[in-house]
Image (cartoon, rainbow, N blue to C red; front, side):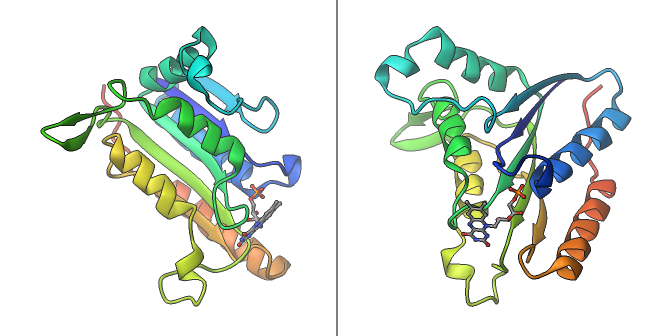
Length: 191
Ligand SMILES: Cc1cc2nc3c(=O)[nH]c(=O)nc-3n(C[C@H](O)[C@H](O)[C@H](O)COP(=O)(O)O)c2cc1C
């Protein structure tokens, strides 16, 4: 089994999504101590914007191949300016590749990489639940779900900590509750 761990926060040691993605990885390692882990830190080593040359390059193909090889993908995904960090968008741009991760059949898109486990550790400063006045400008979780769904990953697990900008009490409670959700993650890894 192979696990790909991705972080994208620019906030270094103060990052909540890094804490949560790390907790998810530790939880999975406890389920399968032999799992093979690759780590990509998109803030420390950003990928370039894709262009046609990049998509055709060995470096671009290596990012896609690393994703294709993974059985489990853990993504640390903060909300920046109502969306995912541009560093994480650049990674998605490398893996959303026609005839590799999706194709069109009879005029309909079909995802080609269903069967992978994806866990997204998502953090945000405000509150964007469906009853929140901010719900309409939530473009991080919804975009990540759309991208994953398009390539066939229709059941990602989201571990959410929100309201992190509302003071230390709210921040600590949200992170504690997200860590509890990690403990309760029920992932059936194939033998
Ligand atoms: C550049 C930047 C932009 C941000 N934009 C938003 C935003 O649009 N909405 C929001 O709720 N929080 C926003 N935040 C707060 C982050 O979502 C919050 O700090 C969260 O903890 C980020 O995860 P991280 O700690 O792993 O970086 C922003 C933070 C930064 C640094």
